[in-house]
Image 1 (cartoon, rainbow, N blue to C red):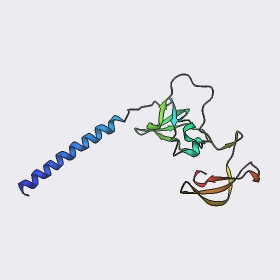
Image 2: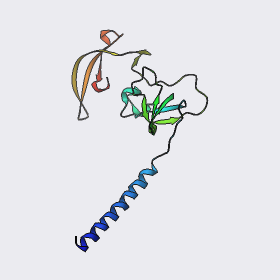
Image 3: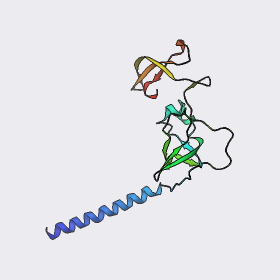
Image 4: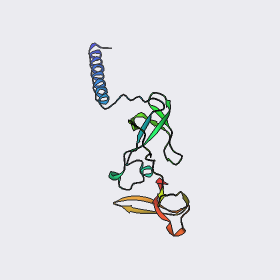
Length: 165
């Protein structure tokens, strides 16, 4: 290899290492060291725009961010924890530490549940999907399903976003 090629290659490697250090430094500014003890209580943070079906709110700004507290049962690796979630929750019980927040103080008498689908405070589940249609909402096509709910009369069927069922 020629001398000029070696100098250019050396300069490229140096600039690449410098850029990698700068990116790592900026990424580390947003990271936090989180460590929870097994048996402790934590809040669970839900993503309001991605987990609409869990929070149960159509208007995301009004939805709660944190639910719980829930008890940690197992530490799964360095950053994942298994929680004791209720049977009615619609999320997986192993969560990353970035969506957990430590609970401090005495346990409250009632725990904020992860909201299931409900109607007049009764838990409802889909019984059958009777049909589909596509609506144009602000230039975006949205697929809806006509859902008959278990425990409700056939008159109370509703059009729901078919992905959230």
